[in-house]
Length: 148
Image 1 (cartoon, helix red, strand yellow):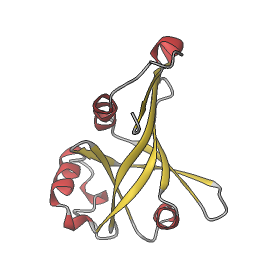
Image 2 (image 1 turned 90 degrees about the horizontal axis):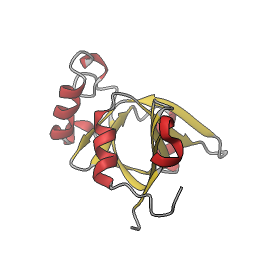
Image 3 (image 1 turned 135 degrees about the horizontal axis):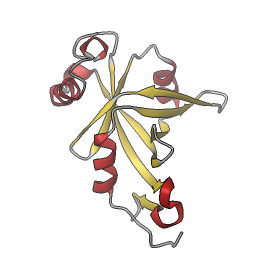
């Protein structure tokens, strides 16, 4: 891969926004990774995720907000490293809640707008991203970095 193989953040966001499911990896107190599937929605140019504050991932993020997030596919890959910013209660962000409701219309029972169990909203603040397509692994690798 050449060092000039870049992708724009807008391109990364478009691919994140089109996905239904994501894998989120946090780090526990001992430094061990903890991967879980999550749902989320892009609002503006950021991916927003939600959780219960009693969940392991929320405990991990409160101690160390650094995360890795990727799409499900191993053939059309998007990986984002960054940190989760705690935005507080989901109800304080009606635009994000409306976007989640629109994205997952058949799954209302599992959304924070319908279940108070989900009491934490996060925004992914990216530091870098990597993408590639397995069918053209060498030719499709792209990178983005917050530092330019």
